[in-house]
Amino acid sequence: MARLSTDLLFVYGTLRPGCSHPMSRWLAERATYLGRARMAGRLYRLGSYPGVVQCESGVWVTGDVFHLTKAMKTLDKLDRYEGCSRGQSLNPLFVRREVEIFPEDQESLIAWVYLYNRNVSRFPLIPGGDFLALPGLARARQVDR
Image (cartoon, rainbow, N blue to C red; front, side):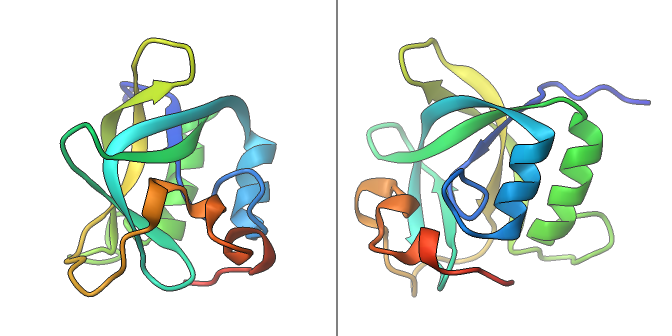
């Protein structure tokens, strides 16, 4: 079985701790929470969930980092949730990529993240890059895709 290059996952939306979505709880039961972090990117409100697009540093997205104990199995299920597992779509909404993240009070790390894979021109930018800072949206609403 092939080894993954990293067993870290950066989450910025419905998978974050504090979000009411069932997949947030599912992830928390299968991974170790390491703390808050940020990545260079722009966060867009795609409806009731966000999407991130990488960009040059200076614009940041706030999220959380998890260590995946059974990384391949966990990522396989998350790939299905995000709609980017093999055979699901030729043009998925999200793609999983390795990015540089910056945990609080630590050096940078490489982690998996689900990047938005479509045009964002019609979606509003989330000010401050923090999905959980939106009033009531992340905690109060259960999100379905």
